[in-house]
Length: 312
Ligand SMILES: Cc1cc2nc3c(=O)[nH]c(=O)nc-3n(C[C@H](O)[C@H](O)[C@H](O)COP(=O)(O)O)c2cc1C
Image (cartoon, rainbow, N blue to C red; front, side, top):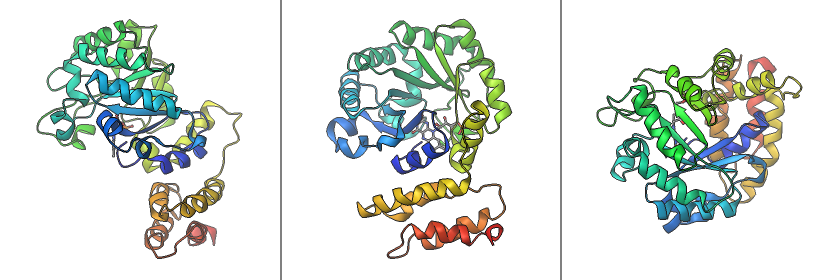
């Protein structure tokens, strides 16, 4: 998720979920091919398994970006066919590519030639007034014919004009049925559902129909949900407490600060850790007020815990 799932965020999330595949923010193929690729591609070894999401529609550029990403050791490369923003549309990639499955198939084929790791596609169920199942099925059929085996589907259409990206994550209705039908029609494909999943029971229900779930906003706003989900799916896992997670972040924070990162760039991803718990507000407030201060370091996190009434 853009501006959210950077490497600091992913390091933190890995402490909350041992096996879930973590996704980067979308990076454009152009930024990797023509920009400072190391800045966009570097990640912490602890993050594995981690997928890079690429935005673009030019098969050559997508292939070159994939080759560089493969050298960095990503576990999966994902093509963004779901973003509705104007910026992305003017570059003719993202969700508007759902109308051009052959082009996505061409990108897929060029990319998969460059790497052993799977290249997957993340799409919507449709665009604008094409919210019929036949449209989605046709898209998947064409891309799968090129060899693609994994599809992550955000279960709502993208409206390409008139809605902001934020509205496009809320206004079009969720249609899980389309995604379930896809799995029934293409049992050999790995189908992952996304959109509006915030509770363990919803995940159980979805997993009765498809191979996996992708959690977006809930993972960011209430990250401990990831730990609850991981413990639910693997009861043998020894689930860390929120306090354990904070403690495990301290060493990371110290290392990153020594390398020049700012404290707030790391702690901003941790604000939701106590969401829904007593003291959540004190935690957020303490960090928000102190992380930007000159010389602020990892003890801000320790002090933030101590500032929570529940810890008193
Ligand atoms: C701040 C933000 C940034 C996002 N950036 C991306 C992105 O870079 N690539 C992408 O495929 N989806 C992106 N999304 C969409 C999410 O991946 C997800 O499809 C959507 O939020 C619906 O899932 P959810 O209800 O679990 O959040 C973003 C969502 C948010 C809130």
